[in-house]
Image 1 (spheres, rainbow, N blue to C red):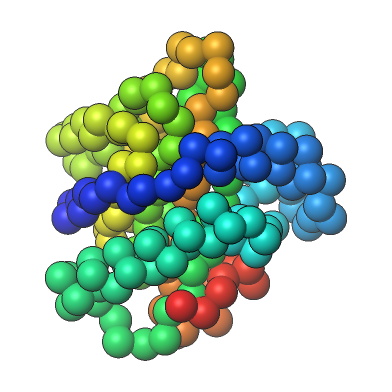
Image 2 (tube, rainbow, N blue to C red):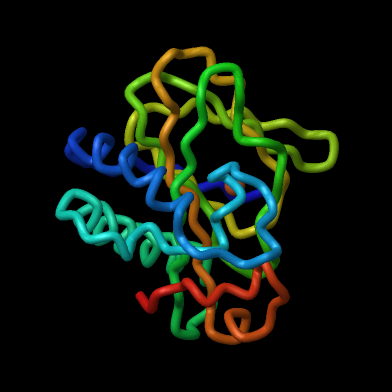
Length: 185
Ligand SMILES: [Fe+2]
């Protein structure tokens, strides 16, 4: 499944900024196709990197460099790329549910909370466990199913999820995968 792992650095003040964005994100106008109040379901509706903040911008620049490193490592598409990223906040006794990302893209996440957690990837009969520490960034280019471990802490679990979409895919998907929120990188 070609999992790529690295670690990005960020100022922990970023966490305060992201937490106070949750309300704003829930108030954003969104497609009638989003029918829940769960912010995890709002991901097609915004790009987290469009919110102005120095710490977030710094993380964005590092992520773009990392994406380019991974792209050359796996000989991925030479088409212009668009990055769509969103915020995942999870509270005690919940988790990021079992899901997979779209085909033909590079997908991944940046884990931001100080507490440790796990992400489980499933491929046929194989289960791969990734231990997440603060700043851990994971990318993959095959749409394998994954989920987080149950979150047992009182503080919220914060991470960013993202897809890197080449031009030919960007214009050729159905909602929620037809992203209009990608930014060129
Ligand atoms: Fe995911």
